[in-house]
Structure formats: structure tokens, C-alpha cells
Image 1: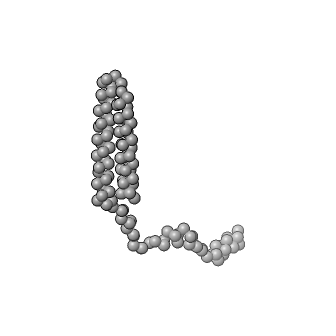
Image 2 (image 1 turned 120 degrees about the vertical axis):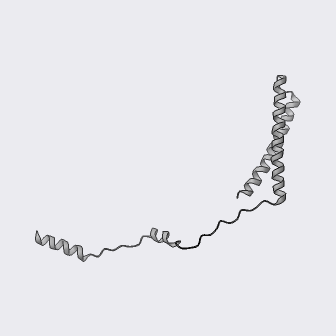
Image 3 (image 1 turned 60 degrees about the vertical axis):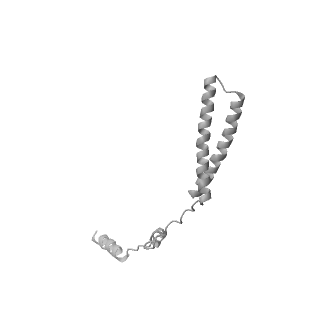
Length: 111
């Protein structure tokens, strides 16, 4: 028993404890102390693009109110006439065009 204890102790002290750095440690420690870069500034809309955006937003608001008025008049009359339906279709197309302009300019502003 004494002999096996001495052998185990001798083996334990004879083997040095080796700690090898892992690649993940090196990757994590690489950026330590480095200055942080600021995010690049967002591209601002030009004055003409901002004006176009505001005009398109106003146009969408105006078209929505016109559509609501036509639909309310149609409901009061018991149904939409063909002229009212044609006007709703035209207004819907204009609204879609204005909304595409808004979406495109807001996407540019938010990049």
C-alpha cells in the first residue's frame, strides 16, 4: 500500500500541469484595448428628396380621406356607382404610387 502511494505521488509530481491556450481565447483577446470604431453615418436625404417624402406623405393622407368620403357616400346611397368605383380604383393606384415613393425614401434614410 505504501509503495503504490509513493508511485502515485511520484507520477503526480512528475507530470507538470500544462495549459495550452485555445484558439477561441486568442480570438476573444485579440480586440481587447483596441479603440472602437463609430458606425458610419447614415446617408442623409437631400432637400429635394425630403420634400418629395413629405409631399408623398401628404398625398397619401389626402387620398385616404377622399377614399373614406367616397365609401361613406356609397354606403349612404346603398352602394357604389360605377363612377365612384372607377374613382376609388384611380385613387387606390395613386395612393400605391405615393406609398412606393415613401417606402423607397424611408429605406434610403434608414440605411
